[in-house]
Image (cartoon, rainbow over all chains, first blue to last red; front, side, top):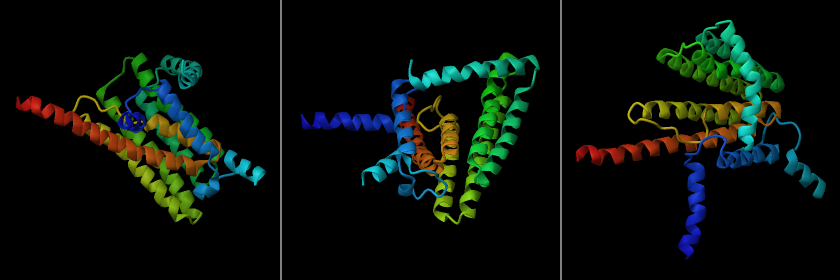
Amino acid sequence: MLRALLRRPALVLWRAFFWTYDRATWQYDLWVIAILAFVWLTPPDWLRDPTASGPGLIGLLRRLLF
Amino acid sequence: MTFTGAIGAACMFPLRAIIAGCVALRIHPNILTIVGVVINVGAAWALAGGRFMTAGWIMVVANIFDFIDGKVARELELESAFGAFWDSVMDRFSDIFLFIGLVFLYAELGRTDYVVITALTMMFSIMTSYTRARAESIIPRCKVGFMERPERIVLLMIGAFTHRMAAVLWVIGVLSVVTVADRVYYTWRELSQAAPERRA
């Protein structure tokens, strides 16, 4: 049971990285959304980005909340 | 339809007009390929100067040429093995020019960490193409892995237009490493499966 439960996320990860899907599939869309989220939401300070402008969405929320 | 499919279909409208124009003028596809590389040198120069918005627009123009050359070749019935080889070689030059622009920029800013990250990203981007080319000389097909050239170029444009180049370099770098590993593993598996059959 536990093995079966663990197998599914492991399979999802395996398929996400060992990629065999075509472009314009829902799997491709998911990867694109994840990548764009990382690029646009990650505060540039976390990556020590020397050329970024603006804090990014997460950075903006952190400034507003804390 | 998926949202990436919809974006692709929307982009095809203006591209079809450009392709039709090139076909009407009978512009040789190999000329289009080299023009794309020359324009990409301009994008690299803009990146080196930290002018990301300019670089983004130049990349858009350069990659229109990159995208349409194969389609124009098909329409003009000028498809050839040399054309495919020429296109592939010129694509590598375009990629390297863009990364050199970024290496220069980060070196100017005194950021050796990003010089190294950009250099590693460049190395794995080139290896992504090399592993597939080399694999397809020994197995029929090796089209696996996410981070191929169109993804790389679109990401570099997004990084330039939204001033998020560092995040883009991390994404291209990490996913290029995974893509290279994917292709090595896939080739090994295909050859391992073929080996017992050959022995039998």
